[in-house]
Image (cartoon, rainbow, N blue to C red; front, side):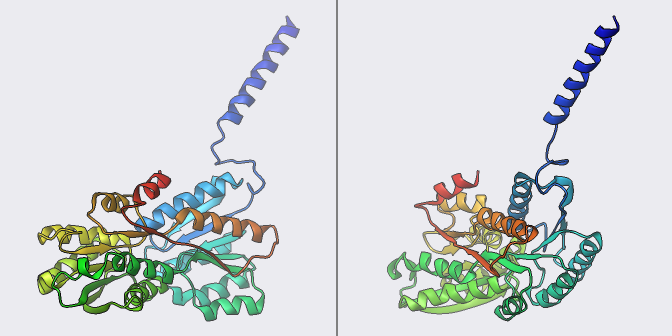
Length: 341
């Protein structure tokens, strides 16, 4: 009888152990990096693109063997003072690596000095610090890098999407020019600066004459984008032929303003954005957006995590790790959309 009780107890122990193993959801991962702490600072959780980015980043880190419990992602609420305080808290907590999407790119030098002084590797994402700042990392041999796409490429692709339509289609008033309005993101952000500049440069380089009717800052926000475009349409009416938006969130707002004004994208106005959000791709397919540019959050977030791993392992990391944007038009929007699901 005693032997039978011992056997039953042994079986019960094995069953419990089996269920415990099956219940592991990454929160108590036993992977190679399960004991490593990762601090992630996002400039603003409400940003559509950064929501996709941070979700993919966390999932990929877990797949690499990090514990979900040791990955902390915080919302900077678009306030640099808030984010700086969060970084200081991560330093105090002794994280093994920091991944930072800065509220203000101009604060990179201050952030870098703070993190380097604490001997913590640093991966900047999405918002690129200046070339001078990156040169400083290289000169000093610091464990700091930037992972992202070159925003000049995204702006160029926006201009090409419009230019490829041909002047006959775009020049609705027949004056030989392309009249446009520009809806910018955060003017301090290098991505906003480059997209604004290079979208128009691409048209000029292709031989088009352009005329800017309005240029306003929408801070990446859909509601602000809608208001800016609504006001511009009220002021300039049918003179507006193209609406450039530095991101898709503002372009989604622009769509609402365009519809409310009784205009039709593809018929009497054209609209481009950047990011290739799911909703934007759907609008490109339906013809309610002329095009967008895929800002590859999957490649970028994986690249950031891979750099974090290299830093933890003591390996050398290039100060700039780039990837390409992809032009999105009706021809390939469904393919891009399918890849996001």
